[in-house]
Image 1 (cartoon, helix red, strand yellow):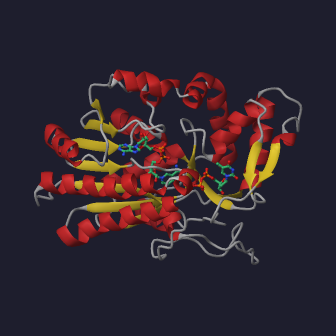
Image 2 (image 1 turned 120 degrees about the horizontal axis):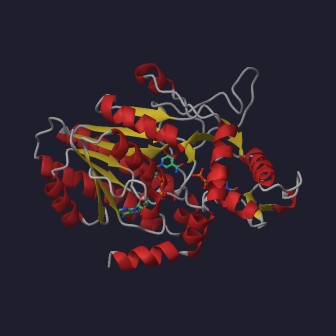
Image 3 (image 1 turned 120 degrees about the vertical axis):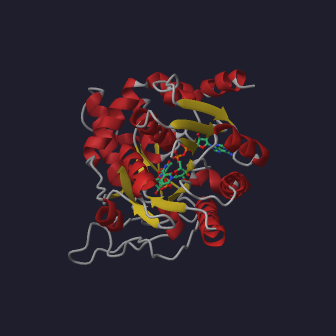
Length: 358
Ligand code: NAD
Ligand code: TYD
């Protein structure tokens, strides 16, 4: 495979995937297609933007004609599809945008790939990146001997039961990808991953939002009682899994990706407070007063936990970054990249790039 289209490459996870592929595969042409929404930021890719095997195209995945042109222009043979609206709270306020981008955008991309490949599937692959949130929510129970917060896990065989407009739209996109495989024979793959954290994550998600707020001594809004559980994975471990599955995954199959790492939100908040305060040389507990319990998120899923043994057994993948160390790395990155954080939160980078690509 030579010409790889990565959508959403200017976003959080996408930028890590682009960086990995550009550096690791100089023989590939990596085409990063991104609409540069509020979540897309080319500053995430400064270190690779001049690489000879890298190209950026500003385009919307809902713009079918443009997609068709790009497939021809770069003679794309592999797609890694990450472009999406990705934040649950935004999906509750604005579900239409999620259906448009995540469902119609994915369908447009599939159809552009199908037209370009014209039934010649040799050496082609459409790899769709999805979320564990499509499986719904798990119970919080702690029977004797069960890993930390419950006995049940999301497996590849778990039935879809999305609750939020975000997860419903991702579920819809997953179904379309599988439909293209089953109906037209398109070589396709889907992976469903747990919550990611790490550098370049937009500060609307729990971890970067709270790091930023602790730094600036702003309130930390905890939804409900902070008892909800998520399974956290360092973003570079996710990017490594994507690389492995893109090259060695079984076509037509699904793999779950997770950190084997369940945490209650409130425990993460305490860990973040301890870490930021220590690195800023503040006295222990200095930021505890910022904790603020607020009205729960509508339809807030109680617990997510991935069983990633299939990926471990079949392809030998394991998460490598231990959570407390990953949090330390992440906090240090945000502290050292205040300028990135400030421009992203002020919207300056958007104005800059909107002018550049007008
Ligand atoms: P993100 O919001 O940081 O980035 C999304 C990117 O997609 C941005 O660069 C944005 O500009 C681009 N985009 C949005 N709409 C577009 C459109 N219409 N056309 C072209 N580009 C568009 O998201 P992320 O957290 O990096 O997530 C990437 C993918 O991984 C998503 O598909 C998401 O569902 C999935 N995922 C995320 C997580 C997580 O914890 N963040 C976990 C599992 C799966
Ligand atoms: P988030 O980072 O939005 O990821 P997701 O909803 O996709 O899991 O939220 C992670 C958890 O943190 C989730 O249980 C909601 C909670 N949360 C808060 O308590 N306060 C906040 O301000 C945010 C953004 C999230």
